[in-house]
Length: 596
Image 1: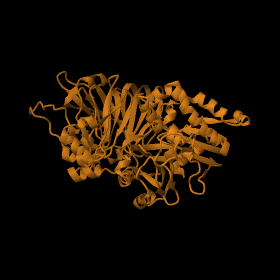
Image 2 (image 1 turned 90 degrees about the vertical axis):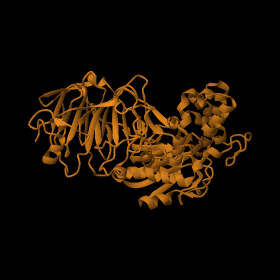
Image 3 (image 1 turned 90 degrees about the horizontal axis):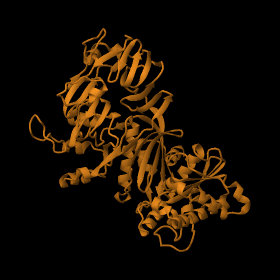
Image 4 (image 1 turned 30 degrees about the vertical axis):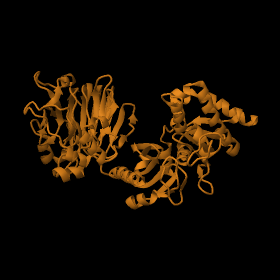
């Protein structure tokens, strides 16, 4: 069987539906509030039929059961995918979906519902609900009791052409005006948290909520998911690759070959007109490509290509960046962040809570990847040999906390701990702004100020693991006492935390606003330039690389900073000063940690 198979959409009326799908190739009646068009489904709540060809009139369920050669995979279980277009003419309910384990436990269903959205259209200033601010189930329960759930929802701006992966356990909702293509596991299990007090037109009473089930499947805290798209060719982009499905975006302008895969593939036309072999298709069309078949696509249009994922696990390393305000856990391939989960650190909740959250995040990656090692970048001071935090200023109360042993016990792979600045220095020296230099000194200006020194691609730790700790060096003797740092330390005067305190003292709205003031900018530059000059006179590196959140406003002070550093060093050194911004876009810590 080599011929593509075209399916007829199945439209469904919804309380929040409308008429927008007419503009995207779907035929619907004028009096129907169409919320969904199921374009590929074998689910009991709606089975799609073959539109034409030798299998015309067959259901997807019948094909799956009787023609396994089409699909190239074991067909003894349920068909793995469900695809639909959604017209959110009104807000959808705030909801959450279970994962496979929870679906089997709570619903006796084989699949949970991991899904993704391609934003086909939306209002100019659109945002969707994606995540929450609760740190625990107890906080969630309290918000429900007080009736303030909506105050804890997170909104993410979206534009036409955006793509979002929505893992099971994520609180989410589409908002008014969005039209999306949804690709998901074969499940229709949804737990409603909030429905805007709407009445069901059929019953005249509010639609039921599923609060007890929802509280059992929500991820606490919310893990923000990030997967950078990968440009596979000038016309082909990978949007996601999960354990459940892959999704690619193809911009068709010429003739291209869709290579054969061992499993079936599915094409959805988003816009324009394309030809597949000898047949022509327009927006809304859904075509299944049989396994092991090569297809020719041409025309002028935009299509998504999807299908089930191979269960072969790719070996990758895990990098963790444990910060004072945010924690990031990333799957790393050389210098590439393949996927990342991030969540608030909340030091006051204690180290045991943070370690448990790390385990949950790494376990999610373990479902997809063969994890070979774990590296943790954390605030110093710490003991890299024993894997213990000592008394980090950014994590008050976390004294003598072992981070490596619990993770090694949980995942049985090598686990290392390193000062966050050292890890970032290593990442920038291997793959970033310092990759072409032998001697690299890295300075991070963020919540705190840290430093790391890499010579000939080897991290210099010092006798006690504190080499490069520029943040506690004394710049001036004045200043407020600090519980851990020296009075007048570089970190106490020029870090993001110090700038925020100064901004509050000056009653300005932000660090950016503070640095727009010439006097305050000169003050900050003097402190930082003195610290950098001290580095040059002590280590004489080929390059100093500066990263961290405060560099986000470097355009306000960069040239003045370079001039101020030159004023503070020997005249003979001035022509050779090389100071650069970090290039790994905030990923230096997790990349360096993964390679330590």
